[in-house]
Image 1 (cartoon, one colour):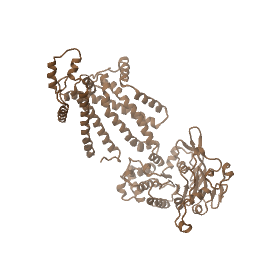
Image 2 (spheres, rainbow over the protein chains, first blue to last red):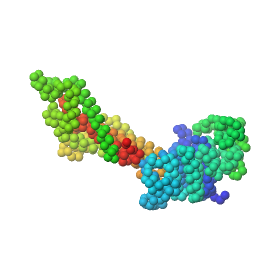
Image 3 (tube, chains in turn cyan, yellow):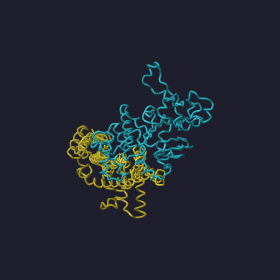
Image 4 (cartoon, rainbow over the protein chains, first blue to last red):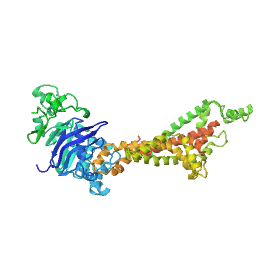
Amino acid sequence: MSTPLLKVENLRIALAGHDATYSAVENVSFEIGRGEAFGLVGESGCGKSITALAVMGLLRRPLSLGGGRIVLDGQEIQDVSAAEMRRLRGKRIAMIFQEPMTALNPLSPVGRQIAEMFVLHQGMGWKEAMDRAEDALRQVRVPSPERRIKDFPHQLSGGMRQRVMIAIALACGPDLLVADEPTTALDVTVQAEIIDLMAELCAAKGTAILMISHDLGLVANMCKRVAVMYAGRIVESQPADAIFATPSHPYTRGLVDSLPRLGERSKRGRQRLREISGVVPSIAAYPAGCRFNPRCSSVTDICRTVAPDATPLPADGLVRCHHHG
Amino acid sequence: MLLVLGRRLANVIPTLLAVIALVFLLFSVLPGSFISGMNEDGRSTIDPAVMERMRKEMGLDDPLPERFAKYVAATATGDLGISFRTREPVTKMIAIRIWPSLKLVLAAMAFAIAVGVTLGFLAALKPGSLIDTVSMVGAISGLSLSQFWFGLMLMYLFALKLQWLPSFGYGDGGLRNLILPAIALGVGPMALLARTTRAAVLDVLNADFVRTARSKGMSERRVVEWHVLRNALVLVITIVGLQFGSLMGQAVVVEKLFAWPGIGSLMVDSVFQRDMPTVQGCILMIVLFFLAINTLVDLAYVVIDPRIRYR
């Protein structure tokens, strides 16, 4: 692979508590090539969203960057000036959020919210920017964009609002689109449309995607490579098809097993969908050793004391488990 | 917009009726009347026959429902009755007093908004900073001050010691006489506005759409100008409206203290003399003012927030 578009190395995100500082995310490394779709999967609270915010340079108290490097197109961006970061944000890396209702300003027409991108990054006047916003709405297939442009967010459906978010994010043709659970708040029927639209537009513009989701199935469909996060660490990273075929970490196996599959019942008879017992530990109470050990079915003594190192897997994959395979 | 206005105004009438009924009832259960009050002064003893005649003249002997019906009917035509004390029409007395009252309330509110909202904004943009601490301590103090004491202190400092401003009275109706009472009246709403503005702005700054705005690569200044101001304004307007509306009622103390010839001081004097028509007229004015401000606030919501439509 040539130089990757985004390279995250040993990222640590610090969480300042009342009496101590915790590592909300540590030792997270991954690479995304130009135009590549990369998925980051994990349960709520595992640190995937704040990893995305770290890439955007949008961490806010009590979270802060604790260490590591974030390299965009050969340029280290983890500690560039605020003004420099603002120029990158929106223009070269853009972000879509989970809840399109609250992510849009309720008192501002959607057209204006798109047009802001052209005013900010391309120095256009408002009139010209509004025309471009109309084009942008047309591109994300919002019907009658010339009228919708004056609508307020509450006048649009959830799917339409997320289309507006996509239009904003892709307005300036960024190199990387960070999508943080872009379909979680939407109806199931709309989810597929939004994913397809995102994938199609990004493919057309050569935009890479950092897709963040708790839905392994969705991520595996869309992305070439997938990393699985658990309790602030990446536990496994593999090409998407391999993750389903040969999940190496017990947690990944648990995730794969907990997905319902078409045709399963006729093959194996009626049975309960398997689940991973227990919950994600809180940041203040991460267990020693492997953080998955209290929930793991194949746990041994070493898992409770020693944190496992990364073991390479085929095709640039890796797994962090003492008993992988 | 006109529809909204019409509906709001239609709501005003039942409210007014309820207020009139309440005031009317209250004064009919209170012991004593204008006439017995004249006697209790101890200055003069009135011939019982004269008292009887006066009672009749003023209609105090009629049954309550009848008096109420008469009063409502007269009020509907804009006639608030004749003052027991001065024998003048109440409308005329109020007409003289309303402008000083409005002037005081408007000045107090202007002071409260200018200082309170500005401080709240600055405090919210730099939480934990010196300006935040100082203005919030000031706001707490302002909320806890008694208007009466604060008014006296203002008089003492600016009128007596520094001799910059007159200590009381309406004077020629100019700005010099207005400043002290307006500050005394405005300090409460000012403090409340500072606190609520700060809370509102902080609230908006934590909103998801502000994060979106930052993700677009906007400077903090732009974020505030384009996305925070208007949203915070919705919350601030609510408090402005509530404070503004009740301010004419609150002005009673300040008007009395500064011998300000407004509705409030007229009302206090009339209460002491059991001059019922005048008291009722004053209360009616204060309520009307409250309702008018509320209506204006509702209209302001429609202008600012596209989500709000009254059906």
